[in-house]
Length: 171
Image (cartoon, rainbow, N blue to C red):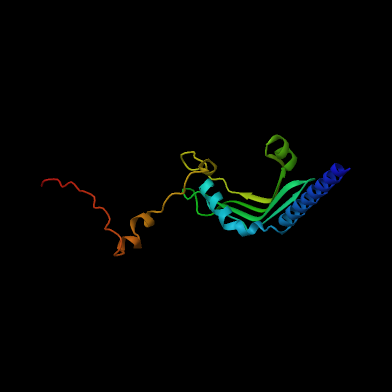
């Protein structure tokens, strides 16, 4: 009889702790503001793509039925500087769904839904046949003016820039 009471108390305690953890998780998910991480997300995506990247707002929802749902509003991706300085891609709204069950059971990221509203893509082909879509992941080109002149080179605390040896031809 005493063992049954102890097991009952342990079972009730574990069940209450489980409910508290689930409640805390639900509160965290419902109050989590992914837009706080917008600067880090933009920086990481820009670095990975080698292009500018920006969006106005992002929302993240989690449910067992629909999985993880991500929405991006007014997404813009710049073109590679070798092609143009304008936007390569503009999307009014992007919806992305990921299946939670597939991840938890198979450790696979299964995209369950992609929905794009009002996409605009600018594809440019150079005379040599190269397309701007081929430059994903390549770092943007440095502008000549940035390399030629820098205020850091004029500051007294920095060492002088290295001089290049020039070979003089005899007259």
